[in-house]
Image (cartoon, rainbow, N blue to C red):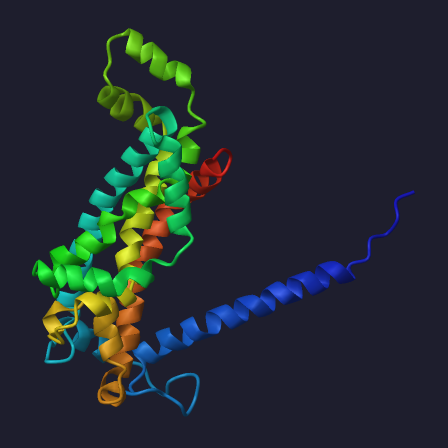
Length: 283
């Protein structure tokens, strides 16, 4: 006879998950509602606005001033994200391929060094990076920001290497017998078999400029509104001077920025998960 299962653990489990979902979604819902409310500043009277309007979105997109330059911020961030995506993806995949398939002197020492450096937060070196960029005239410029984001991307090769390690080496050997060189093996055989990790690397490289505030605030420190990225520009809307006038536009900007990222994750979610789990099988 089957014993009757106690439903209490399942009830508590789902109740906890529901509570966590509510805690996580409440600030997001408040931000969305505030972006459609009629108040320009923070709405502290009630959770739901008294009336709704699209005025804040129209002002954000079509009415620029000395504080609000959202179209320019979005363009700056998009350009940095695209260039960083291309350069960082190339660095990461090439480094992972070399560490996974090639055997050369100093390979293990380089891998140990990379693992050790990854233990330290990247922002520890931001002051020295800033002074180096200032010496070469790349501060307050989008190329300098791209350089900072992409120059050290190859050190984050470990997940991609773990995925490449699962690819059969007999395929490479067969290609060598047919006269293929290393570049042909890399882009004609390995990359087509590694679409999940390629997609994962592309998404990760594209998202980093969208989420970064620390490096952008150090390098893009001119104070000129048109030079800012989305993170810096939206943050300037909620300082002590501008908060009461631009807070609703800040919320609208947060909603607009999240849309392309959310769509990208929804489309690429399957490949993203496969890339992470595939790279964790072998290191």
